[in-house]
Length: 428
Image (cartoon, rainbow, N blue to C red):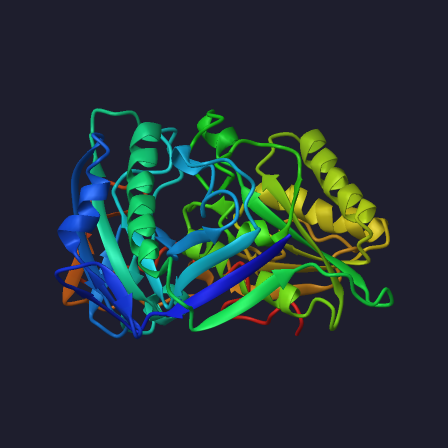
């Protein structure tokens, strides 16, 4: 696969009489873009707002952040499969992206109706807390959207995410026929056979076990969120959005997956420091030890079959998913694949280790900080002058207390940098 990725750098967003991009400035005709959103009869309310870096603005509930991308040449569409979009295999031809901006999906609906996976994240555009999230440094076009409340949870989820993708398509279309600021070619070319062969094993959560649904909304592979055996993806497919959609944490959104610094570093050093073999996407939260160990062994077997001598393993969740993830590290090592594990750490209580199941094979670990905020006594986030989204935020262990969103807030319970945005990269 050969993919040309054209980058347009966005330095400013403003509303105006027409939707177009020129010289780093994106102008948005609000009524025109919202017309595409309201083409879906399930949408009952929608508006667009702009949030700029450094402004005293808070966005909540922040469900997803999407980088505008569009296929210019080649099969399929960017962000394929999800919400009824084309299922054609992507990763070839030419894609244009508007870098330096995000489309923020702001909606109240939770990931599924079974409970437990609540939307907790908010985004501050100013202040110390906001600087943890790379999305606070983007020019953000926020879609505040509501679906028909009588619909089921899954229908509401797909309606509001489809609305965000409609905004993506409208915005990205502005650069379809323009020449990009930079053009980068991504291709897994033949390299010096003496270079070590490396694989990236990217573990992503599936909501199936918790929700009881094979189609519950979550990070999707070509639109699929259900538990499935490990898949091999060409990294170009990920650059075209084949792995997309949010989960319950800020670092598992569409923007972070598409801009994953570990993936980009792997690719850019292909042919220089190593032979990059691609990405194995591994679904997590299997329910039995038998399933967890089986899937770990299958992922390692696939990596070995592809010829991997080294591997990086990352994940995007917490709790029992750790078992199949760490077993994958173990299985790779037992097959002779030198494996690095990039992970956040969990709460260390009563002298317990900060990793749920320490194994002797996991001897190369990069820590991206704590999974939860309470061990480091994270300070409260200061008040902000403007709120985009809901003026009240639900809080408390029983989610039965409401506080003004603009006021002082507790940090979200989970702040996880899965891919190394704020930590060491896979090469360091």
